Length: 322
Picture 1: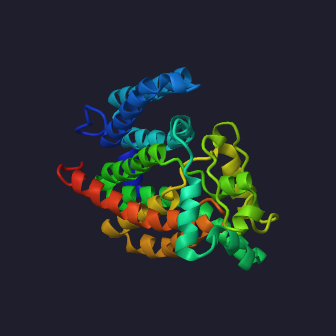
Picture 2: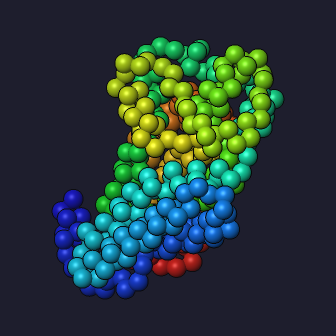
């Protein structure tokens, strides 16, 4: 801890002149979505607002770069990473504005789910395991997604500081890869689709095509489980704050969790890896339990997270990280 504090409040001998790798990743995603916005301008009701939002993100990024150049402290370097991670909460709802140009695909995924499992796991899981303690464990697992990012990021900073920028790049890069998938694969997930169709029809195996229904209707069913629970309330608050009928396939919760676990393992933070393992298992199960995702979304998240880590770890291995 003493060494970390010294690093945070000491001037760097060789401060980085340009943008950090993770900032370039964000700018690449910004440029990509700028192209989509201009190509679909007439079909995007909030296109102008989206452009201004991106310009504000760019201004914040450049301001943080300028502050670091004036005060090249380790703390400022970390602050730049914190800002970009925090901006994910802005980028996430923005996906809905882009993928609403395409027809909804929930009927396809619900049909695949029924074919593969002969039921809807997201419909039955919470009914079979309805005890309040189990419900709280599921909500704890789902909410642990946020502190897991903090624990792994801080762990890398403390244990293997030279890998910090690279680790943040891999995390942010994984998010943005999934955001691109979400733009072109518009799946709302059970919590929106089941509510729109009706639970009786879902139970009967009826999965109608809703086309552009979610452009005008964004009603989400409440999470199943113990409504008086502390973690239940935290999950509901998080959903009410920023959830949209978007980003169900693959599960980014599961995918990013996989990325975090792999980062912990590869940076030799074995204690952190094994300490987080129970939460990772709960998180995987909880995505289906609270009806945020179909089971195939969670399974796909395991694959996409692993592939994102392998790809980004390989790309970042082509240069030195200081």
